[in-house]
Image 1 (cartoon, rainbow, N blue to C red):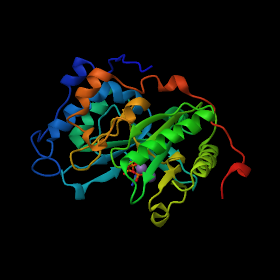
Image 2: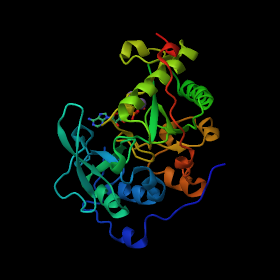
Image 3: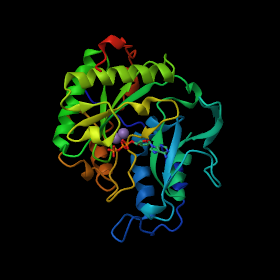
Length: 307
Ligand code: ATP
Ligand code: MN
Ligand code: MN
């Protein structure tokens, strides 16, 4: 059963703290939303979105001029960044030390619209437990010739397989043409093991319907197939956050849905900055209790992998 409880994470004082200059500036063309529309969207979905992003490293996709061609990913601290955001250093596998950022409270989150932040991407681990992820994602990327309905069917099929492995998968639209199947896991394994484990699971999933799936990255391999992208589950990699908008026409949102509702979606792009707040107000967050469903990620043996 979907919990519809709404925990208030954004107070009236937080809302009053929002400051947006050039509020009427339109983004992505004359009929696009204004900067204020984006700030209001994030204020309205914040109670649902914040539990999924707070205290995790984030990559922010910023479009400060409102032109799609001027957008860029921001993974590191930047000038004028909201003061409540955290910056912290970590060393990658190449031995390079890099500084990352995380959103730590409602005010820092609400202030980001002022900096032209359109998309939020986050790690599958918390800043304070950086090396042991608690969420993994199978990013289903449809190739040419795959219809939305087929991606939905594929996700439902994968759900069954994952449940057979003792996992509890959740689902969201990507905001593009794909679907993200997200699984809460007990934070026991380090990234390297998690990447290996998700690789083995992806291969096993693909083997259950080899005419539908591929686990090979190249575009040519994907024609009329769905690529099961498990590479989001590597240290330092990110996936778009639940409720994040996408910097595309009409600003669709990466929208968490219940498995039952997934099958009722005909056009995922209709879940966007203007429609989603109203829908959420009545339905609540279908992912509200996700952390209660963490299970151990199984380590399938290589012999069960398809070639
Ligand atoms: P869809 O596949 O439906 O179009 P998606 O979000 O799944 O949407 P992908 O291309 O499958 O898009 O995944 C790309 C992911 O890689 C992004 O969601 C983002 O988190 C990450 N990413 C890509 N480029 C960068 C970058 N320069 N910096 C940080 N993260 C990046
Ligand atoms: Mn994708
Ligand atoms: Mn992908």
